[in-house]
Image (cartoon, rainbow, N blue to C red; front, top):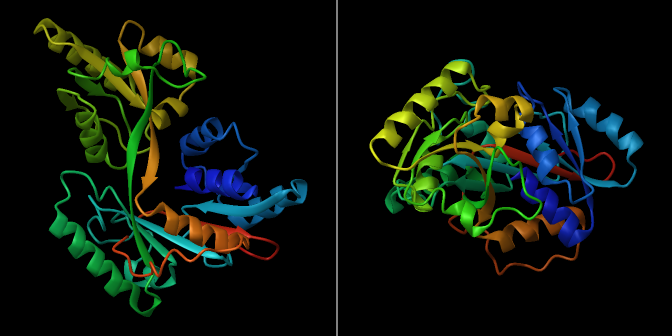
Length: 324
């Protein structure tokens, strides 16, 4: 969502964004954002103290017009103009417990009443039944109380596929790259928060079988044991006369030194998958962003109350004294 908001601010409103990230573990997400936003004048700041990082970067970048805070829902000392909360439809609240006993940073009953937008992510996957999606939306509305945020729906779609050995091509992937996935047994070397979504995505683009999407924890670096296991699985699948490929996400690729990664995977047909976020009700998101930035809003037709939804969060800010 952070990348999408940054592009929207610059490409549609000519407002330079400052993106703030905590820099979790290997800074993989921040590094991935740098690579993906290289074509727009975005400023990226990393540090656990978002306010301090913002002040330091704003002092040296007076052209910045909006601050986007990734995973900033609990940073209550930051004022904000727009509060966006995302929830994964596949794992809405985990075990319902807060860190460290669970995945939640804050109780949803406390967070949702502060939100302007709630985005239900992965809601269109085949494993999310329509009745479960509707029930989750209703529950989120109940938790949000009188605030009545717009509830949107998002998903990721594949945008590029390229070989680890060759590096990211300037123009993205071509049709021949995608043929590596279609009909193949895909062996994942990934450390992501929702492996089920990746499995569904790969099957959707034609993978015959998918394994290993949860071989690593979220943000975990590739281990020699994981690479050795992937090599054994590649040999086993290939010995049965089936085509096999190894796959990493762009976030996995970003957290490693590329030369070491290529050496570790030498001899394997290894690919990097890039995805983009799609929001079903993008006109509603665009209207909220335009209003935040002070652009002339066009009311999207009384869409407050659309069946839309929550998970991770990005707050945004525009102007002095405003938080994101």
